[in-house]
Image (tube, rainbow, N blue to C red; front, side, top):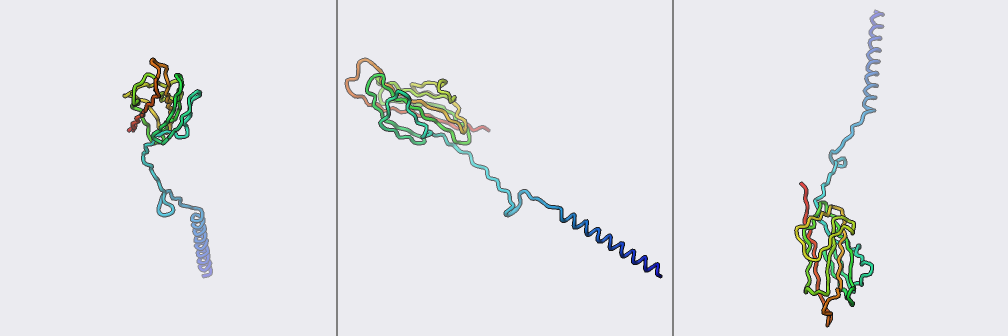
Amino acid sequence: MEQKKRNNQLLVIGLLSIAILVMSVGFAASAYTQTLYLGGEGANAAEVTAKAAKWDVHFDTNSYVESTGSVQATSTNIGLTSMSYAVTLTNPGDFYEFTINVVNEGTFDATLSSITLTSSTNDPHISYSLKYSDDAVPPAMATYTASANGLTYLLEANDVHPVVVRVQYVEATPQLAQDLTINLFASLNYESVIQG
């Protein structure tokens, strides 16, 4: 009987030891595990925003610079999509010339498809030109003295291209007998280039 009692005690001690061992391993396993969530609900949710495409071709109003030797404008009004100026050219050879940058702050490329140059009168005493290039290096610029269509100058998103405008008083015969006022107009027509 003693032996049986002793076997029962050993069995109970063994079972208790196994139970303590299982509980220790279970605690250790649960104490050193962690679940990490990517995205979920509430404060743990992942939020993604896709921004809409944006068209934004305009003049950099701070880039206007008159060229060396140029007559100064008596007034300028520079906006994001238009510019006007007034200038007086006193003697043959006088000129007014400025550079202003065109900026594409949109999310897709643009193409300069045409340039329009017009004058309220075609007087030989005044020459009017616009220089433009899709290369930001001025020596590579093309000079336009009349309207041009079918152009393919690329203005990539987040890029800048200079435009140079020049008006000059040209010596012509006969000389001017009275003051001449001319209204000049130029437009740069850009189209979107959406790549699919």
